[in-house]
Length: 169
Image (cartoon, rainbow, N blue to C red; front, top):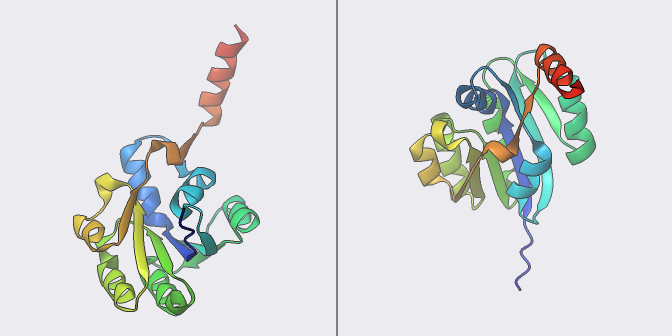
């Protein structure tokens, strides 16, 4: 058996992933299940850092705490789109990691993928396949589709009460 030792950074375009999940699971509050997705992406490689970029000032403190506690990750609030801050961070850490995994299907990252690869960094994309640009999949060294088992669906309080009522009978 061959032991592969790689240092991996995971950079997440939160808005892109959230929009992709919501477009597939309409009218449901769906979020990434990091506890299943991160090990799937790492495949026994070393996690160097995890950063979740998200547009807007209101970012769940529960998400930030969970990412920090479980993965020493951080949430980066972005003024507008996450594209530029994520791209800058990827170029800054490119010499410190072997692989960068970008969670986004946005074709705006194509030039970043090409640049990182030219610097000798392995670039992987993880996203909802249906909403991922084909050119991004083609340019990446590897593509991991985000599937239903990589998500969890939050139940609204109204729906939760209905479920609890049904369980009592």
